[in-house]
Length: 505
Image (cartoon, rainbow, N blue to C red; front, side, top):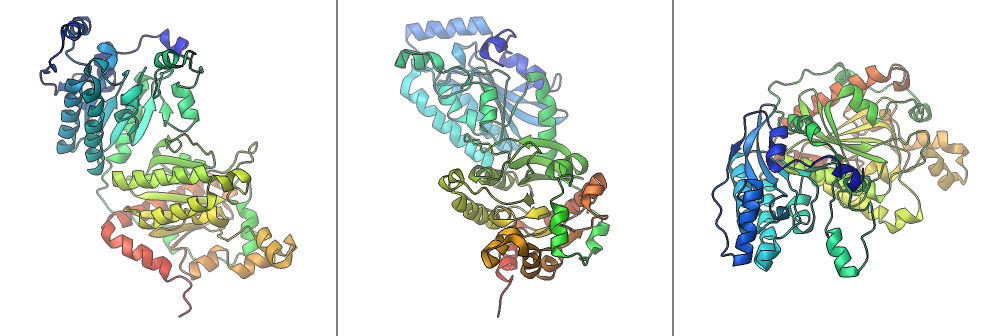
């Protein structure tokens, strides 16, 4: 949607947005009377006109209310008040609200719509973005959700501070979002800013924001987010039948061929048939979006978690995971850690991209950094070998407190054809190489790599929904079991688990 198209529909005021998002009649204002910073006559006149025009006393409204019965704090810009600009009084109001939400243990929804710093107040107003950012940091460090809804327009210092710090960030359709407003750009450089760049939909395509959502759909999205984030399981999960499954006698090469069936269920089907309240997230938040990796929030039973995993290419695609996918994966690891949620990684890849772009993008370094962060992430972790597990792209998502494997999953330094080419200078020995390397679930289980096996009857491609539901039950059980153990007890066990694998003495 273009700016012109979005302009046909009036943008909501702060009061209107609050009314749309919060349960009817639940909003309670936190705002205290503002103290103006000794304005000159012209600025005092501007403030007076803004108050008469909008009926509010500053460019932000703060308070609390309920979203589908859950208590949340809100900070919402009023753009009609001096273009939603942030001066010292507005900044103090924002900081007070964030700090109050942190003390009360409340999730916080920010709804900026602002041109940025209030020019009439100069450098001190500009510096106030630092104290707002510090308040957001403290809120996030307390393990509390910080959710952002970017509205039209959001630019300047607001976009460069509290507008871009959300755990999850969604935006209004057609919203103008950017660092430098187009009017300023044109005044400085004497030419218009390229069209279509600073638009919500383009930022979504580039992996900078998670979704583009009209205001009326926001309560549903927030409800799903809060359902996952605030889920508090009350009862242990009954052990699933899969906990008693033991490896079969399948040959490694037979499992590899089964895993390559394009009809085999992948992460998309696992979430569709086995999870609830699934909310896909999007990109690194830093201008990268690799379709080979999926990042989401979801619930398996009552167990909320962050999900990240390989996304099999569609039949029309020929994409392999590149460096950006692992930067997105590391965003998921940080989300799990900050929000106090378990992390679920799902492995199903024929291998990482081998290309000029991957090398120049730092593929090897990204695999290393993914391993480093995953081994040390301060959250319970479960990994799932769902199908193919080739190379460093698979290894980067493997380390976990518990590992579940589908019966015909496998893990190998390279696809067997590649291993055969290295050893025999021909791919014809791939079946023998797969057996010799111990890539299948039977070998992985015997060597302590896999803890829990989900059977296939006879393979997942022929019973997709039933298989995904069994896998989901196994995931729910493992997440539930791990959540009962303090993270400080999990971390040394996780490290010791991998230190002990394959030791010769």
